[in-house]
Image (cartoon, rainbow, N blue to C red; front, side, top):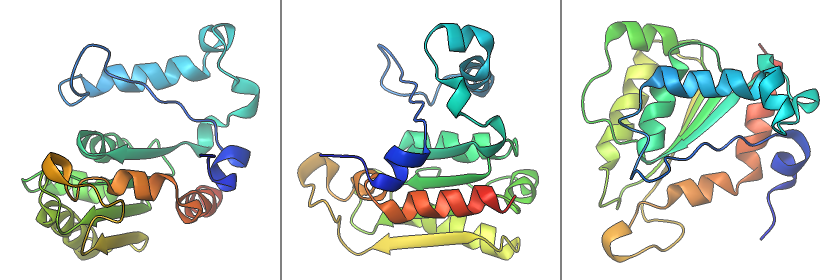
Length: 180
């Protein structure tokens, strides 16, 4: 398939991966922020990062599954203009300082009620916390069933695919980052 036009025409995708590890979840968040700083640096440019096309003041994040939880944590740094997450899995309550820091960050949450890996109540709880904190730009797309039709051990957990191929998500990120 092809990336949505809004993504292909307007975004530089930086996708770190947890080489040899099942997840980024155990990585120090500072390491991920250092990686992003490297992407925008002269060293990153020398390594092939197209920094001439990137605006460090218009960074957005997209996180799926464990990456959604990491994305919310990184968003508390207020370095990102918008975040979209899918299948958020943090089962606790975010500290009040984190909620306060997220109050001005546009956030779009995606989750499926039939997710067998991370219960939809995780995203429900995050959404309620953000709305109670008066986050004016928080959206929540909740599906009754996994739109991708994933079954078995990953039933309901594929909303990251649905969200990542949606032009609406990238159009929203562009609008959100332009408004800041």
